[in-house]
Image 1 (spheres, rainbow, N blue to C red):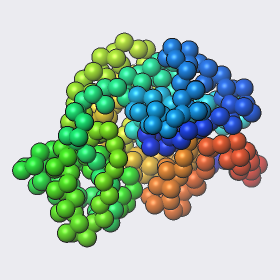
Image 2 (tube, one colour; image 1 turned 180 degrees about the vertical axis):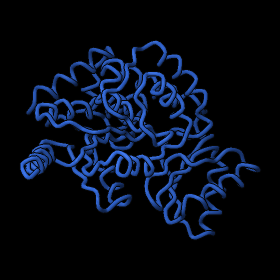
Image 3 (tube, one colour; image 1 turned 90 degrees about the vertical axis):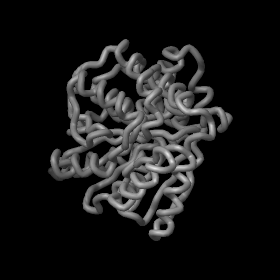
Amino acid sequence: MSKLAFLFPGQGAQVVGMGKEMAEQYPEAAEVFKRADEALGFSLSEIIWNGPEETLRLTYYTQPAILTTSIAFLEVLKREGFAPAATAGHSLGEYSALVAAGAIRFEDAVRVVHARGKFMDEAVPAGLGAMSAVMGADRETITAICLEVSKSHGPVELANVNSPGQVVISGKAEAVEEAGRVLKENKGKVTPLVVSGPFHSSLMQPAADRLAEVLERIEIQDASIPVVANVTARPVQTATQIREALTRQVSSSVLWEDSVLTMRNDLGVETFVEIGPGKVLTGLLKRIDKTATGLLINNPDTYVATVTTLKGETATC
């Protein structure tokens, strides 16, 4: 069987009702939602399954909701016994990856990301920060323009390097706007994003500082398999490395394209299974490496299809 990596989505993948069908059909999934409700002291599952959407969209609900849904799917998949060679998650999804690798208990993770969402919301006053997606410009050009604009308009930085030709910039609202204007002059396509803050920029440092204190209070163990960290695109396994990576991640770039290439080229991963709501990471995988195999688990039907495919690989090896 080819080497597997489990991938976990981040904020933006949420949708009201996610995971409900899985919980109705598989007791392992239902148990995860119950554990989340008990850990948080309120019914997160009610918000996930019944909304309303504007409540689920609040960062401090979105983050534990996506984590919980992803781990619910993972717990069902565990019954099949597939062993990944590595895990990774996009931004918030890194916590799901660490739970999958046995580094953080699920209950601790769901409480931490609930707090993380609050810290990120409170780090910058509403309206002062912004983010924009940039298509059709290379990383070097975007970096150079952001550095130049930052000198006169305040910080604007690369927040997500998602795939070739797809980068997200983040920072002070006027700086993001000016960088967007210059990028358009350089034939880039710029789309402002509807977000509550300038995530993954240096303006998030207050959130990183508060998060560091919370992370010091939970038990983090060495990961059982490599977890490719967003901030370095390199594997981390020790508890010290994990704490540092999670703290830095809030105010640093998510190097997703580089992370996938690390798993592909350095760790020998051939098949990537995206576990959680949506299918963003599978789409990015196709842009990063067309020769890699991408599979999805985001509802009962895709679960059955993916397990069937993986069992077929096992039978032919």
